[in-house]
Amino acid sequence: MAVEASFTEIVGPIEQARLRAYQAVNTELVGLYRQIGEYISERLAAAEWGEGVVERLAEHLARVVPGQRGFTRRNLFRMRQFFEAYRSDANVTPLVTRLP
Image 1 (cartoon, helix red, strand yellow):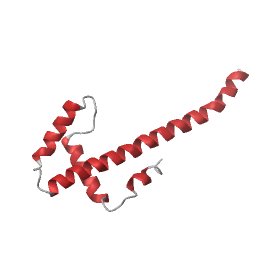
Image 2 (image 1 turned 90 degrees about the horizontal axis):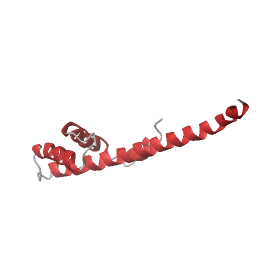
Image 3 (image 1 turned 180 degrees about the horizontal axis):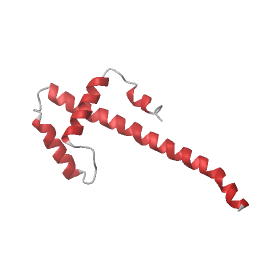
Image 4 (image 1 turned 30 degrees about the vertical axis):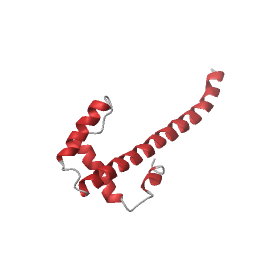
């Protein structure tokens, strides 16, 4: 039993590493969502696309990246909104690393 009690010392570093991994993933995802939002926003603003193309993009992503969730038409428009809301704030992605 005493040996098992000493094993608890390693639980803290494991949990801290797990938290850092989650934060890294979230930071990357926010950067990706911002990049996708920028891509969509620029295409729509330049009148290269109509809004129906975003639905086609969602369908394309579902085919090309099967099993990857979160890229529905609705979410793609949210990514665009996210980009447009924070377009002038270059610190958005680094700030995400501070979130718990």
